[in-house]
Length: 320
Image (cartoon, rainbow, N blue to C red; front, side, top):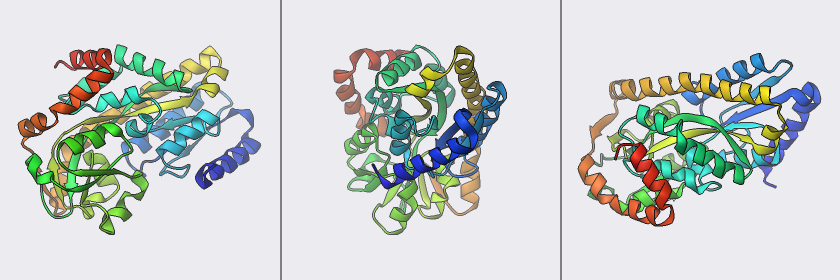
């Protein structure tokens, strides 16, 4: 058991001792003010309102460990719910990583519609087989590349670039296809790794880049839009199965309501943050999208060989 999970277990026991069986912990890794953080607070209020006698403790900013550790804690019943990351969850439920196929979704609303439909149900079934219950999908944006010293309008500009990725095989495969040198690292460790020169740059949605002040370190952003990532809201299956039907409905409705707010905040940030960061001295340019699409076509071939039906369903639902 890692030190972080042991700390989380100690906190969980302490909270249970003061609040009894009705204590729920919702953990996430986002910085204060990030749409995920705002939505977590909204979820806590909504769930407590429709589940009388329940107290929800929101543990943000990776205080309960990184995303993988939070998923492990949810499976073990140490925490009940985590607003997590697609990349981390794909280590446990590989199918969810397919939401990040390169250039799959043309915009955020299309991604949301797909996740709220049959594809989302398919991913939830796979998650339950792994001991987790997907309560819904919040947003984690369309991702772009930021670099310490240059923009990367053409895929050739990425050659040899040491780029931080989440612990997500899809992202690693995308940047390998682009000729970069990708390496996974927990998001909470990213600023320090960039400042120390371990990486030349990283990739994230504009919301995460700004709320974590990564734009102060990597002042060159290229709007590559290379992939989409969701924020799956995940419960431990043991906790979920212990709930009566009314409380399960309450959890699902709280996830939906908070998700509407979170998605809207994410969309607004995607539309407004370019101007905000440019005003703060960041250089932002558009990528050659066609060149990037051509350079990452092989990624589809690889995943279609392993998941032919799901890849086909995703492409059809996304309008490809």
